[in-house]
Image (cartoon, rainbow, N blue to C red; front, side):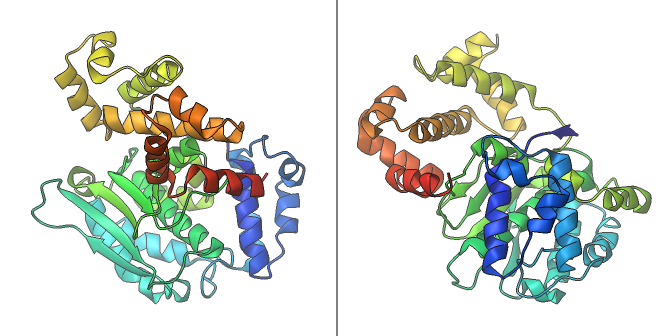
Length: 344
């Protein structure tokens, strides 16, 4: 598995959430040698530091959710749940077993899990939905949702022995001020859509039908190194997606290429390009939207005026840019800039 740095502000959000619960995580920061980095958010945290920090939080709280749940999850609970999952024939059966076991955990009482996998669907997808019971997603709830989806995505990838690219991930809150799309794509395989009515992670049917390839021996190794795997990118490459994304990124300054131009540059027909990207779990339009979102966030943080950003990214007018940004992040550009200033 590849290792990617963790944005410092992601850990800072965890610290703030713990503070609201009256939990002092300073000893965990010191044990993981993260304290100096919080003074300079531009310095990322390594996966090894994130793992050491998480393990220290478990020791401090005696809780596998680090005090974020409605009640503590005793150490060893995750081990018991996963022992049942690895004996499932495929991922869908494993996820259904996981959904049936989670209501027994006291910490999950504020959230209902609903698994939707229609037998006949044009898109042939199955969605895991978190029902928040109409609770406003405060900082603690936001982190709990993201942690749940991180566990589901990463453990599912590990179960079937390959990287999973969900059809989509939606979150019912606005993008945080420290939002880094690339980081979330590393976590979930896709950048989430913020400001959605519900929290969902959607898998295609082929992924749900993938066989479970792990056993009790490999599970013991997984748990011995836990939670290191959560902070590493699942094995599996999507070479065409990477190539197309880079071409789109290079085009931001001078005009993003369309699908026909991209196909010509990779020496294939447009229909073949679309088919291969679909097999990798994405599309030209999705990649284009992700690249535009990345560029917009960077320019907002640099303090560029909205009109300048809109024109620079090829929007016909600022209002079109504002609508697109709201769709990407769940916030207006002005709201996002205010939130970003609040965490800097």
